Image 1 (cartoon, helix red, strand yellow):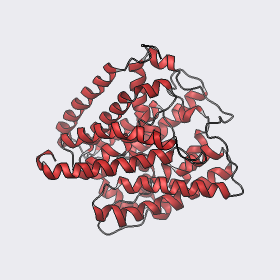
Image 2 (cartoon, rainbow, N blue to C red):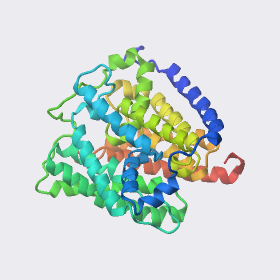
Image 3 (cartoon, rainbow, N blue to C red):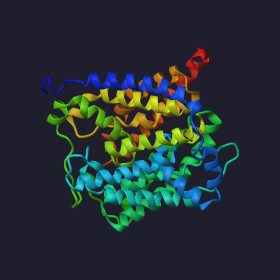
Length: 400
């Protein structure tokens, strides 16, 4: 690789870190003065159990649940942004950004399977309530099995319906079991249960698909007939490293939904910010720590991209998105929103998660999708950082 190709986007990296710090201070200063126009999280959760309208709104908010944001407008934003990105890519517009869904053209089928699985999960489990636990993991199928089955088995009615049903029936129950029986009693971050439900349920689903007579596997990298523009070339990324860094940082916000586009990711963030402006008790489960969440996600995404920049230059994909939706936000939710927790978990998550996910996916069977490695890495790193952070805060409680 040439020297130019190895040039790291230092200006963009430093700029993102500075922007995150300024944004955090500004949001903390503004939060006490914001209105309460939009319903708060507790109202949303309580009404969702017996109101069809609130359950539909809950379903839309689940589109941001992988990011811990849980906002209505963010969910609408990422869905609308994905549609816009797909239509621009189909029209071969220069404004399309990073081509959606790995340039495969399969995104409409991935979306359909994921939304059907999400709707089934919300219908089956949305009304459940556990004593002392104000959260139900209905979002889990939306970002794992359903879309992965379509990518592995093609754009057919069989793969869409099979992925949707298996996703809802396998992943959410596993998550609820692990959360109520293991994580909460042990004081472990709840994200461990969520992502473990994904990789455990995913493995079961992929093995079942091998024996179901109506499922015919295809290589998930094989293009659909609606093939879109290829991803950016190494030359393009190397020629404009700072620009690609910023684009990829936003695109990583939509990567859990198999989208990977900066328009979709940017609209998710903007929608969640608008939700926060309309009611700071609406996002992030009503904790009031949304400024810390946004900050830690920006930092950990930037660290992961910068640390493993050569992988992005040399290949079409590297799992830099993994810590954005796992370690950093989970540690803030579990241990609080102090500056130390934000920075420590963001940096450690950004350094740990991507290489572990990549190592696992290089060794899994061909009939398993890479979401297995992504979500296992999320669980392992969240557990490791959580245990380490717990002992650090026991020794130095002033850091919490």
